[in-house]
Figure 1: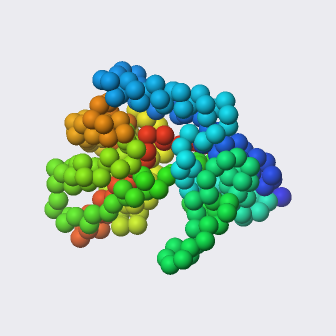
Figure 2: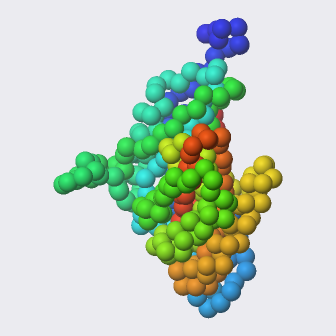
Figure 3: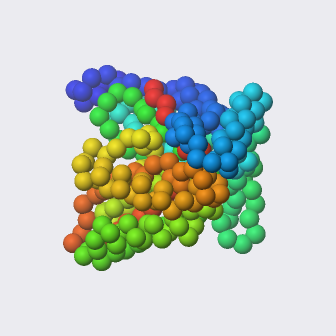
Length: 285
């Protein structure tokens, strides 16, 4: 099939896409993120920190060997999909991704955590669906899918502030620090902190979530944002919440910030956090 003079359209089978996503979700729930292990246990501060590092290593070995999840909260799954303009999908990507989630969660001992309706007497959906899917059309000839397995404890720390446009960086930092100080121990620290600044209320929240997809140790290509990330990283680690809230080891694994232009009358700032597992991965076709 021709593509309006742009070359040949590429067709992607739903079964091929589903198979790759299935394998990815299996790995995210069974394999410890190597980036995390390096930043978490590269150097050890004290007795509790040492204890948890040994525990995490043992847990990782058992999970991989016995095909048991790293954590009992196998989360909800959020997908970020980039579809090239010359790509034709065999079926709606939402359908393929929900089927992949359903199959892998039902085949392995992964907890079903999704309930409906959200208020009142709720019933478990029995396969951890629905999933949440964000789709972006891009240049290119393929499909890239980023999956984020996110637990309820970390999701509960999501926050949004609508600052006055005159707010300073220090005011924003103070709000974020107070938020992590008061609630950070509830979300299985050390945390990965994502921050969205600018845009609108909803896009700030979306940016905060997307910031959690960045690799640990990676810095923003925008110099002032990179400096801001570093500053908050050191500041939040001075809170000494520590590994699992015991006061030793890192409080945050990293801080990542995404920004957007904003209306002159608003300054939205959002924070999203991930637990120490950082269950994020990508596949491409």
